[in-house]
Amino acid sequence: MFANFAIDLFITASTFGRLVPIPGYFLKIAPGSDLVTASVAAFQSGRDIWRERYIKDMNSYLLSLPPSRKLLSFSRVIGGVARSLIATFPGTLTICYLYGILFDARLLAAFLIVGLFALGVVGISISISAYASSIEVFATVRSTVQLYFTFFSTVFYDVTVFPSPLQVLVNVNPMTWAIQAFRELNAPSVGLGPAAILVVPSLAFAGLGTLVYLYQTRM
Image 1 (cartoon, rainbow, N blue to C red):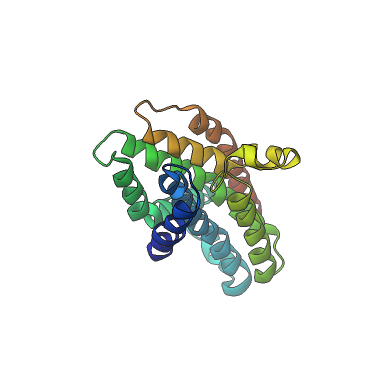
Image 2: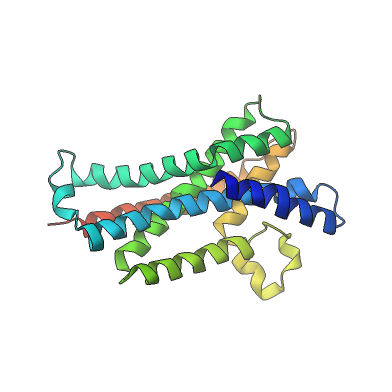
């Protein structure tokens, strides 16, 4: 995943940065590469759960574990967030180095933003896996959501570049809020507005994923 991130950042972003005559465009789109990586890692949680249910038939084993079902469901969500943070750890450090905040308190804010975004995506992934009839259906829905996150957000362009009817989709995209929050780390004073907005959908989707997993693992 770090290899994919490095390709996105140092080839794709660098190329776009030279094509678009906007100062600092390379650094502007850099957080998007990291958050795309976080999204890919987070969606792996739902894929794992689908495989357990339909391929390995592990429900009986999971229900025999000492932890309660609530704790097990909560741990699956938190485990997905941990996986995303680990997968993006070198990428987040790289961007923080480029931003000049590697030894700054804003470094913690960077990981918090990535973690919040991953929290919501894990919840979405688990919810999709619960109702996907096949791994192909899961992959199709996952790809559709990831396309929305990437191309209907401010990864590459400001929201004003999009046609007016599409600006609503961009403004409600959690990826947009995460990217805007990350970009503000490059400024001397950090604004917590986008990060604070991200808390609401992330917790909502994480709660949905937890409830769905609870329902799926019932006796």
